[in-house]
Image (cartoon, rainbow, N blue to C red; front, side, top):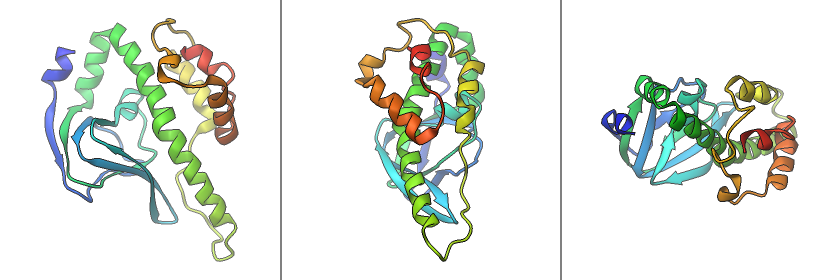
Length: 199
């Protein structure tokens, strides 16, 4: 943990700044201490925001940890102050302290799926349905999620077998059955063995 703390660098984003755009590569993990960040997406060149995070939020942990490009847009609503750690330092520390790094990977994944991805995807798909019903739109331009590859992604990143105490979903106050049905409805992939693998 000291390696992470000593690698932190200060950061300031003014209000209205686009911190990360869709399909951008994450080069760092940002820790916002004060300020509000809006998370959204773009459809037909129109940006829409559907959720916000205020104070003590993390940006880029999922993308850096799992080498994924940004699926959503992150914009500073107010002036945001905090720190960031470069990707190379983040990865090096996770490898150096493998036990802590494995736990962190699971926490990062669950937090991303439940607190960001699920909220944005539901809102985005509703907006796409509205566009589909409009006669003045023959084409819809939007970033598509690789939902059908998520199971393979989890297995590739060693989420098929974990320690029982690495992540306790009950501490997250999650109803597993409701969440499983919810994800199956909106993301069209088999989640029957997902929670049991990560638990």
